[in-house]
Image (cartoon, rainbow, N blue to C red; front, side):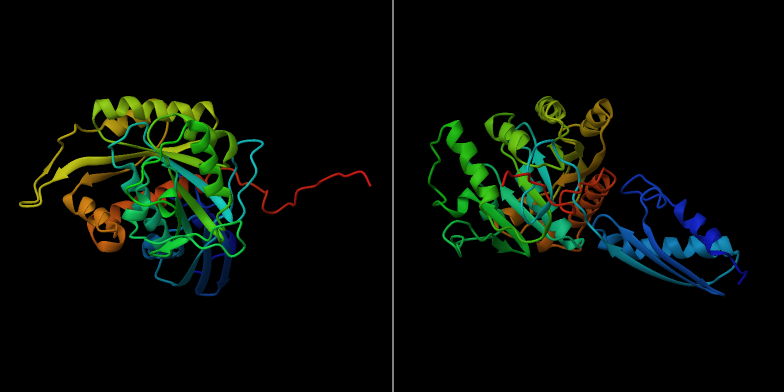
Length: 364
């Protein structure tokens, strides 16, 4: 092997572009350690988001870059680590204890599969290596207990806070855990917003990298409470390709813009229909709607999920597709979306609220 200086190898690695963040490894400061010893190179890559499903491909890529710079085969050892940090939120909002980042999943319109996307997205983040929680913010129509296969009531160790329910290694909280499944919530807006704040703040979340909040449809009281009192790192818009769904999805996107919550991207659900009998794929709701909307507002298209009967069956059975068929194409789609979503978040400014303590001045 031609002897290379550490600077030459570092330069080659720093020029690599991370497809999930859109940044070079140099810009993202992803190369945390590098040693060169004659014909052996050891590199440590630190990603700011979970990406276990990409590690093998990344190792191969780093190996090829180093050996290409050397001009011949070489001995390369690549170590990959993940370090998720907290990112900036709205000004004047207090961080939630035990939660680094909150990701809001919204649709603006009901019936587009937002809750199914939320549960599968949270599970995909967990499979990729993150510690994840789910908050079901739909007080009137909670669905996460059924989708995650959770029954029973949450416990309280101190009589003031609630322990989150756990399913498939996800920490979860929902009003659905506190009431019977067929009990209607006949509440006015103030009661709903108070319930949301209590579910969020009185739950003892444990060391979460991401808390996924499954929002109800619309742009009303719950969304306003989220914008004013909840430290949201970023939002995701779920839509179908249909023009009617896109109308309301645009409203949700504009709402987040007005309250200065960054939209990390758009997920197109039911992008195509896959026939359960013959496997034929058809764009029954139209094509490219989410992509056009994303381009119009300058945000990312994170990916598309097909209209597949197995997704509905899995959710109804309390075993979302990411865990019911972890090696299938749909689970792979969700994992790719999860990497792109958190990669885009990792590219944003870090919050140092968890590093520097709050300073309180008191008269003594």
